[in-house]
Structure formats: structure tokens, C-alpha cells
Image 1 (spheres, rainbow, N blue to C red):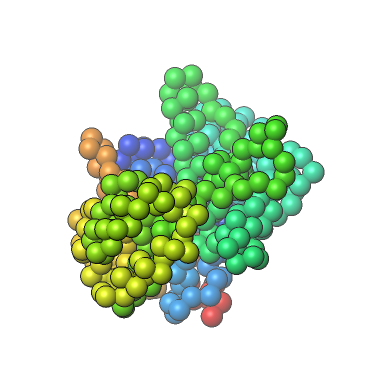
Image 2 (image 1 turned 135 degrees about the horizontal axis):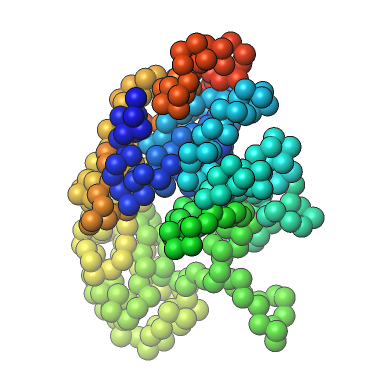
Length: 411
């Protein structure tokens, strides 16, 4: 069976023909590989016999973790026990044919398993080897486990998020993980471009620490003349923010003069725009106690959705909605960001598709995240293993073929 038959993305997209071995688990590494799959790469997700950690997360779906489905679209899945010699040989054969390998082991783990960069580049000198860690490959915390919320806590994100309430708060949604995923995808594509020019692979190091600080580049500036207790908050304050309405909540941003003037006009408060004391963002933020009661009283005349229509493109705004509304939102539909998926255990579901558009290399239709061990047998066959050899690998526990996904989920 050909790779093209196994993977609909193989012949489409700007990364068509690129083979990626995804050894990572949870969110950042796997979603970085998903972004590569979105670009047309042929991604093989390699899981241990215990499954990706994300499969074990609570979910209201009965047969698979919702988070796993959303994080691992458009990949083929194989289950390999790297602690068994036979399983390691399977991985090494995949690596010989791969362009990219991504993992999120702590730095001390790959050498112990025999899959560190120095070992693998002897098999495949053109390999792009991307290691995601919590804190980087060197330093006193290099072997400490890294998690999104831990990095939020130590890098100031929680402090800034909770500043208004006077106590730290987590930003939910795994923002550091997903930002790290983007860093993985752009680093890998840059390394592939370098390889095209220089015919050499390389080792890439991405960390959650680096991702968390990169997210705060606008705050991570400290002039030599400044003290410690200075304001680094990037929020404009005052008008910009969430506001209650007659029905629902709306977010408004009216920082530029023409947006501010349009807001005042459309809520029938032109005198605010004419007041020289409210002429700039800084002045409005300083006098928010004077402006907000009047603005919020005016907003009580209509619902958030009605105001959204009235403001149109004259005032940047958005009525607060649940994510369920996005599946059928006209703009999302027009952009083709929702696809229908078929999964062997979950059945039909809708999910994200094609977040980036290319005029010359349109992406293939995405496909569902793999069930546990779903493609183990097909991948082994495509790599030259006979039916007898696959049976022997399975019997030895070196690989796992497809079985019920539900047994790998916690409810």
C-alpha cells in the first residue's frame, strides 16, 4: 500500500512529500506536528503502549478524549514500545525514511532510549530533529518536567492576568502549549528550507520557557534606568474591555480617534468625543470612572448581538459567544474552517480545518485523529514487514494494533 493511499495529505499542500515522525504527547508537540500536517506533511504519530497522555484526559465523549481529537487531526497512528529492542528497530526504520522527528522528552531521556540526535543523524544525516522541552537542553532546570500552567506561573503570565483582582490567575486554554506548537512548526519549516539550500539536517530546540517569554515580548523589556516596580501591562484600560448589555456581554476596543468617535456617535454620547479631557487613550483610561457609567448605561438599551450589528466595522467589537456558535458562524463557514470527520470509535464529528490558505498549494481535506493503533499494521506493511513479522511484533508487545479506544480514556 502506497503512502499516498494511506494519507490523503501526502500529495497536497506546501509540505507534500515531507514525512514527519511524531513521538510527542499531550498538546504542544502533537499540535506542532498537526500544523505540519495541515501544510500537507505525512505525519506518523508514534504512541507508547499506554497511549498519548491526552487520551486519558476527561471528556464528555464516550469513546475518545475531545482534546486528543482536536490536537491530532490528519495523522496516521502507530503504537510502538521503544523499550523493547524490536520496537526500537521499528522506529529506527521509520526514522531512516523520515524528514522530521519531533519529541517532547526531557533531555536525559533520548540518550537513554538510543534516539538522541547524535545517534539518529548517523542513520539519516538529513533528519530535522526537533526536541521540545520545558526549560531547554541545558541549565539547572533542564530535566524538570514542564507544563503550560507551571510556565505561566513562573514567567509572569499569571501575575498579569490577575493584576486587576489583586491575585494571580491562570489563563486557561493551554496558551503556552499552543504557542509552542506554532514555534515548532515554524522552526521545522525553516530548517527544511535550510536543508534545501545546504543539504544538511540539524537539531532544533524549542522550550515552553522560551514560548512563554516570547508571548510576552512586549513586556519582557527592562531598561537599565528602571526600577523593579514598574508597569508592564499592555492593556489600554478604560473603554477597551468587556461590558454588560441588555442581554449578554460585548467586548469593545476604541483606542484610535476614529473608533472612539464612532463609538460615542453610535451609543448617542457625542459629548464624550467632544470632551478634550477624553482626547487620548491614556486620558480616557485615567478618567474611566467618569466614562464607564455613562457608556454602560447606554449599552443597556440593546443586546450584545444587536450592538455588534450596529457597530459593524466602525467599532472593533465582539459579542461574547460560546464556542458552539462558531461551528455555523457565517464567517467561519465562508473561510472553510470547519470540516466533517469520520472516526472509527466516535463516528461523525465536526472540527477545525485549513486555518491557513495558500493560493498555489491548496491543502487536501483533513482527516480524523487516529484511533489507538489504528494504522500500526498498515504502516508496518508499507515499510516492508510481512504479515508473519507483524504478528511476531504484536506477540512480543513491541507494537500494538488497533483496539478499542475507550479502554485508554478516563471518564
